Every structure is written in structure tokens, then in C-alpha cells.
Length: 320
Image 1: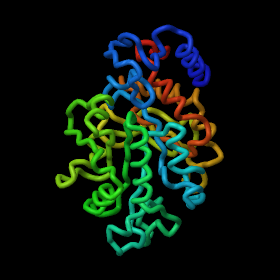
Image 2 (image 1 turned 90 degrees about the vertical axis):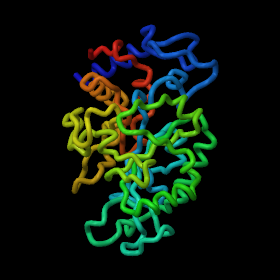
Image 3 (image 1 turned 120 degrees about the vertical axis):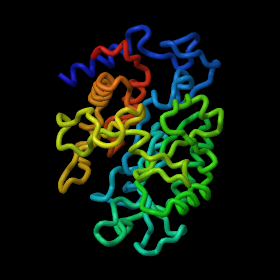
Image 4 (image 1 turned 180 degrees about the horizontal axis):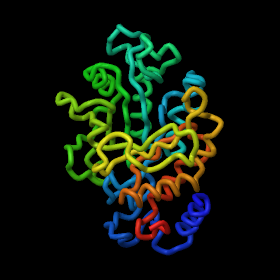
């Protein structure tokens, strides 16, 4: 049933007038304001006047944990790194920040590593990426694409001051948006025009000394993750505040020992499946998923799925 509904959804998107937003609209589309000719945000003109909370971004889970970056399975989550992800259209990234050696807490040793410290040693043992280098590359990519809004979700294990220092050194700090709790999210166009096209969340409590880092569990929420089968995936909130408009639709499968399963990336990231599941979540919660987070992004096409969701209006969804 899911596959047939998703295929019909894509057909509706492609052939029915009013379901697909023109890349550069010539008039008002779906109640959203007309933008200047040629002006786009994250690849679509209609997104410029749409709030951040009403846009779907394709997202890579553990974006740095790739074979290309020297982190290999079972610690890896992708084959290729940031440059390839960005080139394909990914605009949201989950990263983990650690000290390279546990107990050596210096700003210079902040790394991107997959895992936690529960085993008594730093997960950087399995491979690591220099945090400043990776974030600097992201900054360069954003400089070259000034009409794109980007999001980072940080699983953080370093001091907040050190995290800030790394963002400052990379050039990203000056691009950060500060979003007051429970206030309306700005539109993508406003964020871009204001020079604040970067949103950062982390998976820990709010820090009054660092209001630029938004507490993921109070500003947003997430679905379950790492199910055994796609049939087990649903849209029910797992963590966070489901009242919030921003949420992650986690979408990767668990393999041996609970690790990410590289053999089923094509299944999990199938465009028809992603569009249908995202539409189900939209109908259940009255808001499109803000993020579709995947492993093995090279398989399937999460970018195409996000594009389809961004071009849909809820009233045109065949599931309503």
C-alpha cells in the first residue's frame, strides 16, 4: 500500500496544476508571497517566503563519519564526505564533537568522532576528523552558495566555550541565527538577507552563556530511529517537545549489533517510500518534516524526496 500511494503522490506532484511550485513563480503560489524574479532560497523561489519550520531539508546522520574521511564501517555511516553531500543538495548535517583523547580537554583537540565516551575511552580511536577543518569547509561551501540555509545538529561532548571557539575559527559563528524559544521562525529569505543562514542545535540543555546553540529537545522533537524494517517506521514523537514545529524524521535501518545497515540504504532511502512516509508525518502532525535524516545517503535519493515534499501543499496531498 505504501509504495502505490507514494507513486501516486509523485504522479500528482508532476501532473496536477497547483501541486508543483514553479522554481521562479510569476505570481502568488499557495498563499505565499511572490519573490523577485530569479531569487531562490535552497534552490526554490517559493521557499524564500516560507518559514524555516515549514521547509524540509535533506540531512545526513553522522555526516562526517565516512569512508572518504577515513572512518570505516562499522563506525561509518556514509561512503562520501561533505563536499559530495553538499554537491548533491544536502543542507542539514548531524555531527558529534569529542576530544581526541579522553581527559585532554583542549580546544585544539576537538574532533568529529562517532560514538560516546561510555566505554572509558574516546570514540576518536575508531577514526576522527578535525572539527575546525570540517566546519571551515562547510563555511567555504556556504560562502559559495549564499542563498542556502543550513542546519547542524551537534551531539556534543566538549566544553561549550571550546565548541564556540571552533565555530569562530571556522568562520561559521558570524552566520548563526539565534531563535528565541516559542517565537515564530523567520523565513529562509529573512535569514539569508539578515546574514544568519545557519541554525545550530545540540543534544543537551540550554546554556544561557551560549544562546546560539539551541536545545534540540526543547526547540524541536524527533521520531524513532534505527528500526529493524521500514514497516516499523512511524511518525510518533520519541524525544523532545511535539508542540514544536521543527522536527526530525529519522530514517535509517539498524543492522548487526544495532549498527547502521549499509546493505539496505537503497530500501530506506527509496524516493517513493520517503515521500509517502513524510506525507504521513505531515498529515499526522499538520506540518511537513523539517528534516529527513538518512544513512548511506548515496543510495536512493533523499534530496529528490525533500524536493517533492517542499513542492507539495497539504491540501493537495492524496492522503488527506
